[in-house]
Image (cartoon, rainbow, N blue to C red; front, side, top):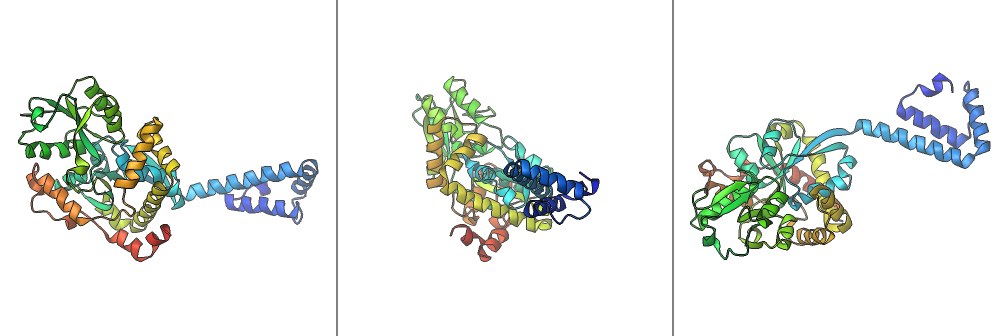
Length: 372
């Protein structure tokens, strides 16, 4: 084929191929060789040739479209179902729909905040307690959305532990000091009159599946565990001493955060990200198979019963239809942190949240259009 027929940009090449398909190779002056070869090929196998050319057109257009997508780095701290909305948004390819090329980055526990603060992530989905702890210490982060205002985590122990006072002298596992599991446990122990690391030893285990195994093997006496790992712990003989979701603590457990600098200079990107996240939440709540597929991929769980139970629980009880921030839950979280972090005292929710993005999407009618 002549060089001039090939040397064009992707969009131009696609347009040329479409003209060839629609005209049968006619009306291509000065490209007689290409036209004659095309006509001979059409006589040999017109349907096959048309299919091949259509594939080429779609591939070229796809490549051209991919080149225009904006790279987006999104962090999450755990394979927990707490981050279900993010997993579902990614699985449904909604970030791509809104012009992004997403990279999902798993950074375990509280280390995620350090990576976010260092500018290595654009957005993160993280526990409100962990985010607030870092913000109180001076990190340049702001909360943009909140998908869950309860804590679907449990303090699970051996069957021989009957009550809170039985924890005295025992060892309880957390993922990392400063992580959500740690920040939830310490104030609760104090409420029970138990001093962390004095009356009850706290041990860092790391991954939640490793914590479940440590409890089953009696290397520790209990641990703070989230879904679906808590269901696995139950199957292995552990029992629930405290369900934090039923403790009366209404605090944001699944939030979207970014740096203040980023949100101030990339408002249009933040709005598009939240559009994808909102639509992803709708898909999660209305498409069970997609939800199960997302948790299987990002939660590392293959047990269909566990996946189904977790999906039913989170979509019926925990995940909000619209991820708007409730300032009262942020105030509650600050109060909880104040019990172990004196710096948290005197702060107000408004210092750590920016509701303007969700407010704009609501005022524009976008949120209503998603749920029509």
